[in-house]
Amino acid sequence: MNPQLLVENIRGVLIRLEETIIFALIERAQFARNEPTYQTEAFAGATGGRSLMTYLLHETECIHARMRRYTSPDERPFSDGLPAPILPTLGYEESPIRANTVNFNDRLLEVYVGEIVPCLCVSGDDGQYGSSSVCDVSCLQALSHRIHYGMLVAESKYRQAPAEFDAAVTTGDRDVLERMITHPQVEAALLKRVESKTRHHGWDLNGEIPGGKSGLGSGRASKVSPQTVVGLYRDWIIPLTKSVEVAYLLERR
Amino acid sequence: MNPQLLVENIRGVLIRLEETIIFALIERAQFARNEPTYQTEAFAGATGGRSLMTYLLHETECIHARMRRYTSPDERPFSDGLPAPILPTLGYEESPIRANTVNFNDRLLEVYVGEIVPCLCVSGDDGQYGSSSVCDVSCLQALSHRIHYGMLVAESKYRQAPAEFDAAVTTGDRDVLERMITHPQVEAALLKRVESKTRHHGWDLNGEIPGGKSGLGSGRASKVSPQTVVGLYRDWIIPLTKSVEVAYLLERR
Image 1 (cartoon, chains in turn yellow, purple):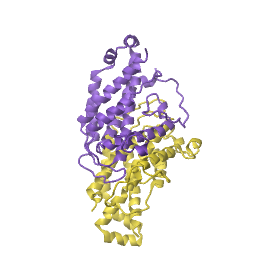
Image 2 (cartoon, rainbow over the protein chains, first blue to last red):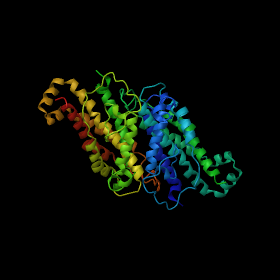
Image 3 (tube, one colour):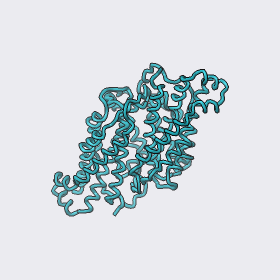
Image 4 (cartoon, helix red, strand yellow):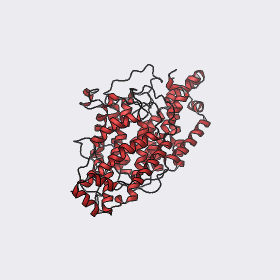
């Protein structure tokens, strides 16, 4: 079996990504919600009709596409029409997963702007639009990587019990599939770990640190409560990962 | 006085940047040294004669310039000829520092590629060129922000003893200025803090986590020793910050 599908390796990658996600969320929480950065009309003249944040996301994805980011089986872009890689594609001995059309980034973007940012950031506008958009892109890339890793998670689970999964896939029953891929004790351990990591990583972000009125400043450090991050994992990150897993499995039909 | 120049605020920003720097270094250490990404000849056809890493750095700076990153007094670009901001410039009531020409990014780039990466990463080539270059850009941006914050540090110190500084600036004696801005007990406390933070942040990066042969993969987690990061601060990050401070002060002549 491809080593990427071994349970201990998948577990290692997901635990590793927790650090990246928690750190990105803490960085974003330095800045206020900054609604205008998510409005398509606010800077439409300069951004070709996108919001400032999705403009930055698209431009970043164009560069990363040239660095062949989206040739990786566990990466999905938010944008269409990205340029071709300037690096030669790496030779894959064997792709760990089946070719598929799974891409939950539209839904992730909706959840991020509508649910995650309001939980994470103080309301209002601190004018730090560039800085907060840069943080948004880091958060979205880390979250997208995490939820789409669900494809490898699903493939790994499938290979442990192909006959049972084939039966559920044939009937197309999402609820049965979701029950089959859910391990409550693994989720409980994850939430406990995330709680503890956030408490450690956020340790010296108490109080306010004025970054001043700079173009891309340091912002205002706002302590992110461990319970906030636990809530984001429980309500959005885990469910989105499961949606990816189920959608990937259903493409076997 | 501009609140950005208050000692406790400067201290807060520098402590906050420690998290960003340590996290970026840990992320880079997942990947091997990957020498070809620093060689101008390796991908010259696709990068217009730059190394892959400086190509990515330049492209990233173009986007961030449009987000007005380099209108901030504490930010300096690595590249020349960047595009104009698409965001209106923020109104500054008062710039916290004097206009100046200080930019130590060429030296930082040299130190980063020649000294920091070899300390941080296992030697050799893991083929993860895109991923390691993305991490390089994050490291360089965080380090550049940190060392150029030295301009605010110097201005703050100057305002506490303008007559003494003016005397040293007039004679142009770098050694005297360096002694005046050096506080050994502050540096010792910083190194102790960095040691402790790296130990915490690197906690679960033991062992190898194969990210597989992906385009921009998760790489191989390599534990970063706290002593490595302490050494990088002691030998490079603190001295470069002091060079910025002295250069900034000398422009008062």
